[in-house]
Amino acid sequence: YAVVGQIRDRVVDDWRAMSDDEFTEALAIAPSLPGASGANLFTYLGFRSGGWRGAALATTLFLLPSALLMVAFGVAYDRFTNLEEVSAALAWMGPPVVAIVVSVGARLARGLRRPWQLVAALAAMTAIELGIGVFEVVLLAVGAAFVVEGRRRALARPPVLSLALPLLLLLPKIALVFMRLGAVSFGGGMAMVPILDHQVVGTLGWLSPREFADAVTLGQITPGPIAITATFVGYRVAGLVGCVVATAGTFVPPFFITAAATRSLAAFRSSPWIAAALRALSPVVVGVVAAAAISLGHASI
Image (cartoon, rainbow, N blue to C red; front, side):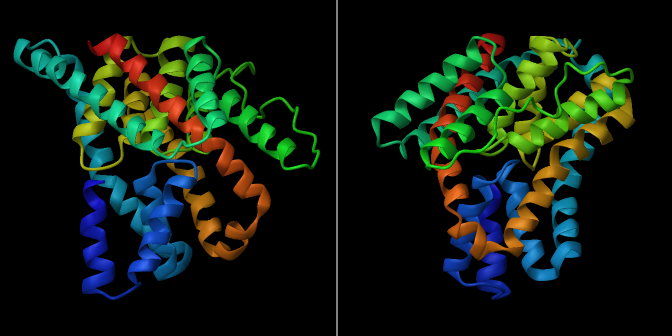
């Protein structure tokens, strides 16, 4: 949100690269796709300006400062968290992060005007709190939307990127976890928080609840999307190679999805399947963000 105003001034007023209406359209499309909304916005703008190369350049330069800061935090984490002043500062930052997550959820919830949407949001939040994966909740919502749309398809397939596969190496496992994260996190980077929490804290035990809360806090105070938290997690799990794999896994799938959607924007807008899926996912996103607030609250407050 902090960067949107600056980008609008550049591309609309200074460069006159697009109209106000076109920029508003970009803001509407970016959060409707999986991944971090900020990164999606840069992918969209970069693609409009310079095709695939422009999209890659804009997205990379937007993420790079935050990624480098998160690597620095990862290198120093064990040393600086033992200092009383730093530990106290992180503890004080935790509750405001929870408040930010709650406020994001509240803003998203304002768009839920139908009873079924509120029920779906509560159901999604409850399912995640009971331990059901966000990936599975998203699949269920999309499947239900397609059924309601009136056409039947074979949707009861097991997830291709299931973590139950006997993965023998750590890096492929990191890649699969974070590619799944990037591919199904609708609603912006904040929606990634409960998926990360469920996987890296609950299922895999890569981070403690305290470390994860600190990682999300550090993701908030860096000048980029909160999804850059993945860089910190990857570093903690497997060093520099792990942070590269985790970052690429998180941002590469949304990059290609956003670029493809930008390339065929008219078809994306007019597709009844896409419209139905987004209608079903909007309340689910509210439930996911509410679950993130609860999860972070347990660790931070």
